[in-house]
Length: 321
Length: 315
Image 1 (cartoon, chains in turn orange, yellow):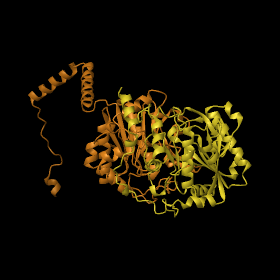
Image 2: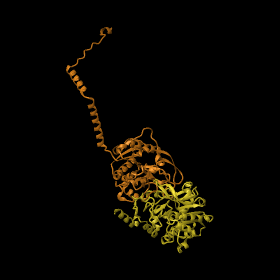
Image 3: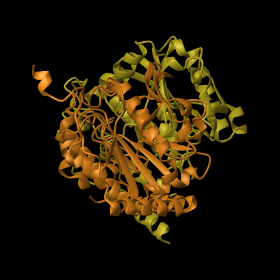
Image 4: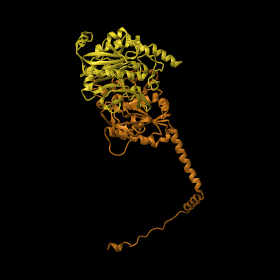
């Protein structure tokens, strides 16, 4: 019943096109067809150039890129980053870019404002494996940006340059047969090159890789296994310039080390327990149960005096922060 | 000019260089397990005890001549040996040239060999060491332990002998110096402590050791068998100065021994002199430090070694 009362087909009004609108559309179509293809390309190229120029204005090429690994962004780690950046600024004679490989956690405002944060994909690693992952992450970043910088510095979060001439000194070394400059810690009975500080130029980047494996025997004939710089530990050992401990004054034979009078490396800076491999070797010299936190507090309290006392040789050449 | 001025200033202020340090030393507590001998350092009666002990230790030193400088070194070495060594010992000197003076004849057994006159520098040192080794082998039934010492080296810590005997009881056959600060990979014969087991393996020659820590060829006197084949039987003593007046000279090793370096007074440049050129002047005058050491040995050593002043010898 209801069907009969309704029409079977809906009746629609015919579309009404305004004559003026049609004319306008035709005009625009004609204009588009009249523009040649090369002109379009030029326009895009201009836009690209402007982008590159704008980028250069923000980040001009810098001679040095510095990379650090941080386990997280706690207040404790923030203090290390702050100190490292202060020393980098005060001791580095060239402009530099700083990048942080963050192992876990969200970047805090302080980190965001003071360093470029990078991360790796996949599950977080632990201990030495995490260190290898971090170093590889930084290396990949350095390789990706190799054209922007001349030199690269891998540095532990509890390490920093202290000598105003550190950059010039190490650049001089790389002008000869050496491809990298890094730490060697015989005081810890180690034969392995230690990546807490590793300075290099572009030549070395493709050859750098790290592995957690047996290095050989340490200085007292015990097996030594830890993170090593694979190619430079043996095959290219002659191309590695080593920086040795140089403290004029020591408060511990292993911790609070100055290397080659250019770098400070605290050791156990993450606040972990003091468990370095040569701990028993030095047992007649210092306590086995060192409170590393106390030494860190002492450094943070007055870094200038602390570093001057330890390094000691040429106080006028050390950075003031 | 500035460089020379800096050098002069450094040389004139060796005493001042031993400055007071201001870091709170209490931030690192002393080791509760630090081994100690119950001897009052002001009580020299232990020297008599040592003298009456059966002599279990034989010490041999190579000395170039009987000049005044050599006599000063021998005198200082003997003082420190007497003050630090808890066991009786016999001292023998291999004299490279000259006639032994009264001081030498009264304080050490002098051995000589006419062949040594034909050798110089490292070669002469190797000949001297071999001659002392022959003496040790000949008298091996009379002693338990043997110590080779450079003229400008001596023990500084009271328990040095016990400490090293302990190492030899744990599989090591010798204890010797490794001078990484001089970029060396070679074991250094300025101090070698051993027992009878090692006598048959010891020998020295002057040859290429391999590459140093910078990859440069290293050639000098080496302890033949222990540099390679028996390397894991050698316990090395590393530099341990709490305070340094030079990165290469005036060294304390493992907090047990002092080795001056360049003790003969010759102005020999050490291998790593250039390596440390940004740290210390190349014109640094080492003779000033030996004068300071001879005049104030206790305070000089106490300041350099530094970790446990009450454990160091008072001479």
